[in-house]
Length: 267
Ligand code: KIV
Image 1 (tube, protein in one colour):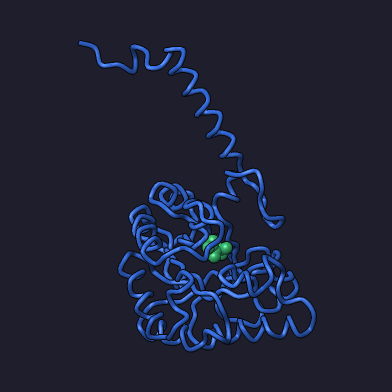
Image 2 (tube, protein in one colour; image 1 turned 120 degrees about the vertical axis):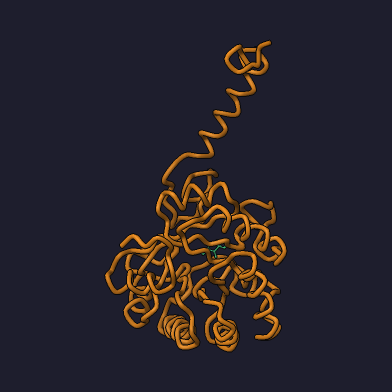
């Protein structure tokens, strides 16, 4: 299925047709255009913008203003993909009303949907944003904004109690109106079970092969950095290619082989 513009109902159809959904993060118009033209169905303006691009050491310091600017840029670079923007830490926990205000700002910036972390504990908030007319994507399992209370990046949903908790969280996300859900660092069998129970699409990251779609942080996917989490496959060596191109450029300027006549304006 190749819709002109990916909408929420297309995601449901894809789940029903068992067509895997592709999602990547993007934080600017340049990469958004490349990913959109390559056929990615969902672009996530994730708060991973904080650690991948802004140089923060976690997602916690990212502000709503920073994500508004990134969301507007991604929306400008996109003509087909559905744009999902993260509600950053501190922009939605206080009350459902505060969450709606933040979601409206991201919607006005160009997001088609917003994503927030948490299951049962965010049920009212998911409901309030949905009722305000903004589609919500849930996020359960390892939730980076709560990294300090979860004891660092670790697999969630192990053991009977852990599994029951994640299943309850995922069910609460769906029952309160979310249109899709991200499952992060969850055992493959648990992600499979949730995918079978829910009617909305599940998008996995470190959640095995049986979710309805997959998401990766684009800098991990493209190999911008040496280190990546163990659940990532590098589909390119873009960091190395960029470094080599930069070295060649410096050398050409130093030895005056660039610019040559073909790159100069002559009288
Ligand atoms: O911010 C982000 O990149 C995310 C993904 C890990 C799903 O939330």
